[in-house]
Length: 168
Image (cartoon, rainbow, N blue to C red; front, side):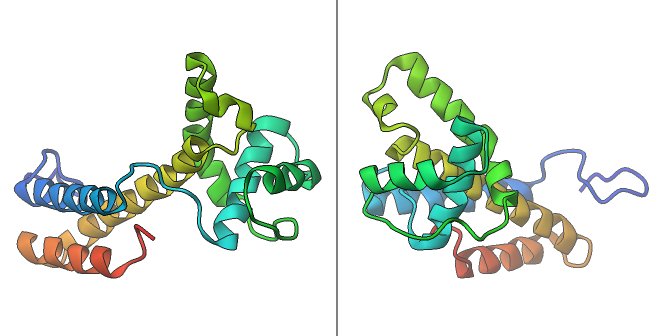
């Protein structure tokens, strides 16, 4: 691997990085094939709490969740108290959500009438989590590459990746 002096970041894509990316791409593709859909709806109360933060920041530009929870009951069979979770994941997912919302409004999709609760909006939130999870595995690879030879660092990252809840 070609490294700059005093740097642990690769200057070119090595075969280990390509193998790692290909493995995760195949894992994600397999999960979509098994689900028969590329749309990933939000599951679990914690996911909805983070999603409500994102939706409220994008649509209402406030942190009052009363209207968001009322709309959520209208579109989904989910009920919970106002979010008691941190807003960090919501801020990270916000760019993905905003691009999806913009694309839905630009194309005139039927999902536009769901006020930010469509399956596409939910999927954008899930894809943001997937993106940041893969980014974390890449950083784990860069870290393990400092201590292990290439194939072993790829293997260790794959073991952690397959053992994680990345595609839950």
